Image (cartoon, rainbow, N blue to C red):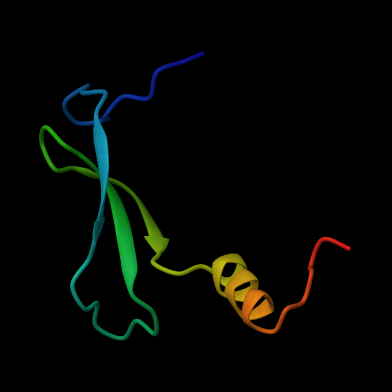
Length: 66
């Protein structure tokens, strides 16, 4: 299996961090960034649609896997 590396400093360690408010964004976001140099490798919505749908189904006692 290939080991992911930072495109900036070649490090192999990363972390997820929540971003502060983004202007004109409707949702909060997280970034995957290098722990060595801080380069942002990817961005994600903090709560994606699948997460929210599963939480809603759980509260309504609906099994989505049927």
